[in-house]
Image 1 (cartoon, one colour):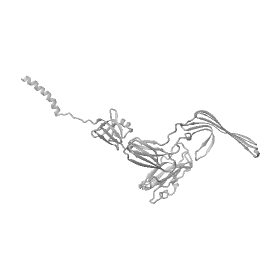
Image 2 (cartoon, helix red, strand yellow):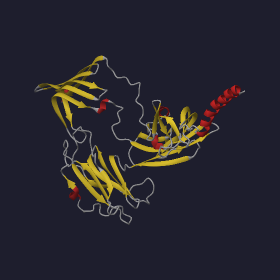
Image 3 (tube, rainbow, N blue to C red):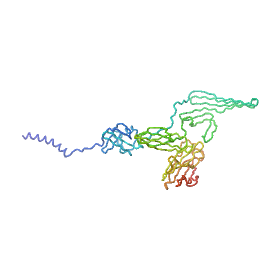
Length: 443
């Protein structure tokens, strides 16, 4: 009997000891920080397919950075963790982001502000024609003219002849001109011009060996020289846009359809994704222009945005700077030039209550007396329109101009103005009353 009981008691002890330890010291159960889940993503109303996501107990979601890039997003600023060598981004850490999750359909709806999407550009510049034939053959030509001058009874007075001989081989062109004149007193044979030129259409470069004209532009003069000439000739490309064009920038929260109107005429329809977009190279043909953009979101809701081109005449205006005072009045300064106007400084503005799409009379601050001959492609880098912090009403504008033509000896013009309470936009135009007081002949 005892021998039977002992083994039984030993078995019981062996079994109860582990159970007692488990009861007295239960294991610590840690919740998993992430729940892997496959979700169907709807990004700003646009389905992006199914992706792998990590859900936290607090309701945040982490998506792979690679999956976000496939959705058209760049490097987003937010909290990221690295799992299995791949970065995952927290949706809750994205500024301005909104998201919701449907447990039933496993759908993750994510709405991001437009500035987190890469910008889009719609170029309105007409495409280059592809059917243009650029000859590269070998050819020769001869142009000539003959004249005869007679007096009374058709008696001989003068005969003359002109001759132009040319030849082309690929991008090389040889030209030579002659003239011959014979009168009763003398004969005269003159070689006019002889040159060998090479045009590089890809880079708009022209090299001339022989006779050529050195031209300082439409505002200058030309000089007949001989030797070697190397220049940039933009007219080599007849499709090159040689004057500034307009632009318009806006943003769409959802995939939308936009309609672009120029002076009330529909010129283009496009579909854009969510994010900021820019309309570039809007054709400019002189005068003040109004650009209106009608944005229709997926729900059919229309949003109208307008922009204006300030161009009261055919002169080119560029490098504008704008500011607003405490009353909502606007001051606008810029450079202006044309074939008959040296680069000058002008400004305008509008009162807060003025009609949309209008500016007041343009004022001239500094009239340029020359042009910049340097090819550094820089102009007015630090020009700026600012409001005086003392009264938040006085506008100060700085810009460069040239008192005379030179390579880089520009002058700096400073002008200040304010909007009076009356109907006139500018009181006396300048705070000092003396334009020259603000002119500095040194950079």
